[in-house]
Image (cartoon, rainbow, N blue to C red; front, side):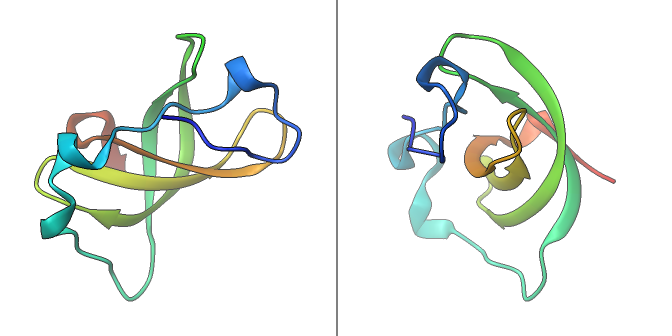
Length: 86
């Protein structure tokens, strides 16, 4: 799943997990975002390691907010194993 992010070309946008993949019913949102480093996969399949913030999570996935390679703010749900604290 991909969302519009400013003028980022479509194949360079982050691909996000679908809610059924990460059980959105168990979502937790912290009072303050947590600084993380995460692997993001683009629509075209390019994988990028980015610095960002964890803004929500479940047992299986983390929603990461980050600035993409074109300088636009974006977010994506990624598997929990793709994320580490900074």
